[in-house]
Image (cartoon, rainbow, N blue to C red):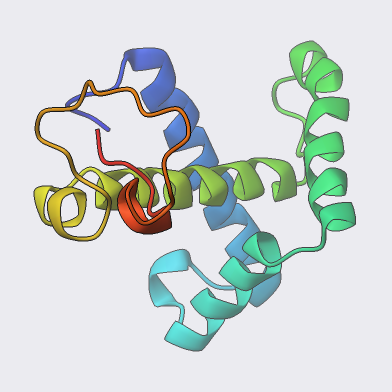
Length: 135
């Protein structure tokens, strides 16, 4: 992120990482660097395996706190919304990076080095056997 992302995106990412560290501290009363594997798995699962209703609550809590935060930047707000957004962003970036590797693009996804032929009604077997296309 430090080398490729614009300043605003880096700041947003770092704020999310800080929120995740606060959420970890709130949950386990210890610094993020001193957590166990089981604690990391549990807190990540709390956010990424949350029900749609819980995810909605995380996002809603995040948007509801924006106005008070603008009024008083020192106000201590729940880190749940930012921690959820941060973990979702990390997961999405990981999946994006995995899908964009040469190995996956050519050997797992449907790869056509010279695309361009339009086949509007081809069979699934003929069109990548149902796999997503690598670009």
